[in-house]
Length: 625
Ligand code: ADP
Ligand code: MG
Image (cartoon, rainbow, N blue to C red; front, side, top):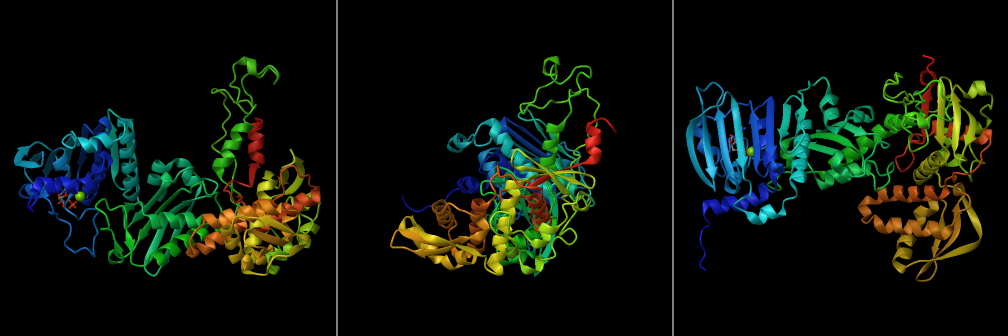
């Protein structure tokens, strides 16, 4: 066949393959157009997961009648007057409407602000018709019917109506976060309605809370940082408030929602040392920079971006979030505490009956064996009575030796805790003044119950100790090496040769952490010393875990993250197992150490290390208030 020019319709359809991947991409394009037109109100109606109908109406500026035919023609746009280096709108490629028109039946109806009446264009099978007079009070309405009917191959790849409807909701939420001043209404036969009321600039968390969940507002830290003209703002979730997937990460570049690999990986890096690798932080982050320093024209869907200086942006994100997290210190998640509270709820169903006959009397029996208050119970628990501790740093005097470096304060188990920490009075009156209070009891071999000035604190000793060991290991990486313990006989650990190589490469670093390792033939290493802080360790298990860690974490650029992971892996091996009995002095020493250690409010896996219940709330639980 000779070379021929493709027909316009075919060109549009090929382009449509990239712009219009699924119904949600149509919604994204249409909503972006409405925002570019200055809309304050956007209504979206769908049916059949967007396959049978998508209708987007806005109250924006509208399209002049003589421009209507151009709006549905390829490469026609009203937005690119400053060139590709100065893009201030969401759209600029002039592709969306013609692409949609080539794979669906498209109606574009609009009334230019101030014009006498509205007009419409209809595009069916790529053929435009109009403009003709039509009825519309203001703005623009775009209706898309029978999407992909002419492209059965594409239709086959779509998911169920429910899944496509869900993807549409996700797209609307994502865009809506960037424009809180716009009211959104998403309805249709395939969904339950979503209404997002307009929110003012003075309440930055209103829209975010409506989209991400109200509890995020109470469990996030504000981020605001700038580096060389790049500004980062938004909110980062507390590590303990994490998710099993990355769907709750909302990233924006100059107001444009993006799912960019580099940005997502920077976010992951920021949380690397406070979160297990299979958990994901929640975050809403806005990057603002000169449009000339970022290319949004990487892909027709515009979800990927390229930064002129990716290192700068990555550093800004990692640095700003880490700093915010470090500043959060002893703050525990109120969500975690709220869950705990459920377990504390008193039985309130039958005041005459004792606990023994309670389950038979119609109260809900909770799976964990506590009793839920029936609905009519009038206990007002007022949300979550658990409160994060105020930014308590080192208490008063308990961290007197902080200048020596955290490394000095550790040795096997608790025996070597800081002298200052150990001598802090066992006198209840004194210790109760500390943020984490005075230890009163150890329950189930792992939970320390402490009395504070105005409440009680329950500490997960295993999680807390793991965190403290980890912080000490990290400190040792940058300061004085950790003390080690010489093994009587070196322990030989057999490993695949690549693993042994990788370990040998970082032998010096491991040495700083107190782990003395040497190559021992092709497929083994000899362990001569172990970090004293870890106590007795299972050398083969530790060495193999470290080898796995090094194998997993790839490239040398990620050395910092890698080192943090190595420290985390070692901390896991050295933590006080739950089940270990502690005496009062040891327990108090642990509490003081936690107060003196930044980031000790959560363990390395992002779980809280302690929760607090205020006395006022205990009294409420007993109906004394
Ligand atoms: P782009 O958004 O890249 O310019 P589109 O194909 O999405 O390309 O839209 C083409 C043109 O139609 C836009 O440049 C704009 O002038 C006009 N337009 C589309 N939708 C609307 C709308 N909702 N309100 C006002 N004008 C619109
Ligand atoms: Mg557009």
